[in-house]
Image (cartoon, rainbow, N blue to C red):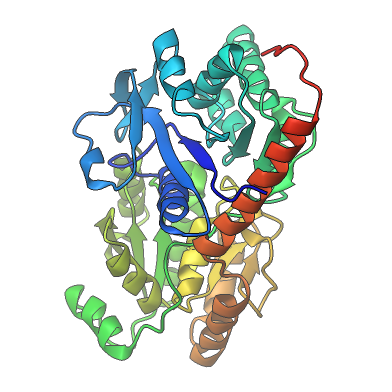
Length: 398
């Protein structure tokens, strides 16, 4: 077995563009390059303005992008043959794509010239974006076909939770997959009273004020509306609390407008995006409960991030984010509606000992570090490579 592998980490987004997948790609590259029992990794990603690649101690290969949109997301242009030959010349042992769009298509073009085993991690419910953004049936059908071919071209497909397989099946993928959960880049810590007091002073909150938390992109598909509606229900019952909303997104203004419309804007503190991970972890530790009713997310990194600080999460039963959570033991479950969320919060928010115990259980039982997660992935690379090398090579059809 060769432990000294050279890995290409392919991703559509990489810092300074920040989202869940860019965090995952960075963690893979960081840890593979840092650990003495692993080899090396190179990030393969489209160009973006004002990149700061010089800050990284490992190579980042940027290929052409046509433009950026939204919060700096590049539209990669992977069609130039020289780009593929550049990657081939780096002599990678395995290609690992974290997106079935331009990155996976780029890896297909590489494999047309020179076969290299490839893994694809399917991170998110792409069919949601296709169905929402593409109204023409004919174009939507072509988009599904493009995604499906990119997925099928991988030698092995990974999902971050078992529930993600439902999304794969909707795209049309009928093959096998491996569950490879993401980790958390925050260490397990105990947020002490002085840390929590710092956050409360910053926002002028008394020590006994219950704090709820949402961390994520400001997008309606995260089920933010039912979070706000549940806050309305709690406020009407006379509950006083504050909801930290940490993040940014294209629907942030609409979310704030809705909060004003239902008269709960005085209960909400918008922090914007917090890039300092240590500061963000203290916010997690200061909150009594994270409210994360998203059924869109396939892994719910923020649930593990909250657990790293001993803070439990309230999630929708049978969602991907709820995988591994026992109600009242390692987290709390609700139904996908505002009344259920409000009822659960109302029932548990005053029970500090229960919140503390469940948060501690989450820290000990559902938390997984990136070091552990990527060690599992790296070991699996060896299996994929061995299977690739021992199998007869048929003509590449993608």
